[in-house]
Amino acid sequence: MNGGIPYGTHAVPSAFSKAEYLERFIAKFIDFLVMGALFMFPGAVGPLAGLTYILISDGLKGGQSVGKRIIGLKVVSLETTTACDFRKSILRNSPFAALIVFFFLVGWIPYLGKLLEAAALLAVFGIEIALIFTDDLGARFGDRVARTIVVPLSSHPAE
Image (tube, rainbow, N blue to C red):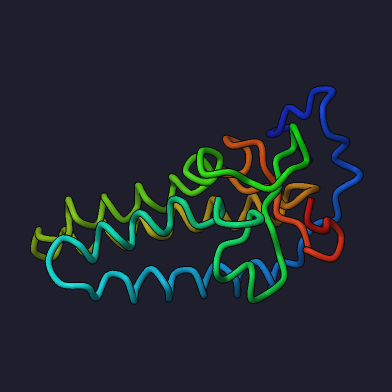
């Protein structure tokens, strides 16, 4: 069910080994913990640092965020089979960044703000998780936009 990613004639998708679901979720959870720790910096610096981290995290050395480095995963480009760069990282993580910005915009509204936050959280995470489980390569929405995939480090060693 890979209709969402137009692979073209570049990288051969069958050459990629799909990352395990649990490993991906643990790695993303670790990344959200790092983002939360950065949010603790005072003033506007904290939220800006957390938002910046979540956007560029997969473009860090070797296509590995802190969570992916700990778990042993990496993000690679489907076009070049090289590690994810900052541009692709920003593209693939933009749904999470948009969610954080949405929280800041509606979070101040009494009652309705919390309801809208919960609905947006369920929608974004629901779509992302559904795509990971239904795509042959485990590509979520951000992966489709950035043309990337998460692979085990053992199946795609460093360049």
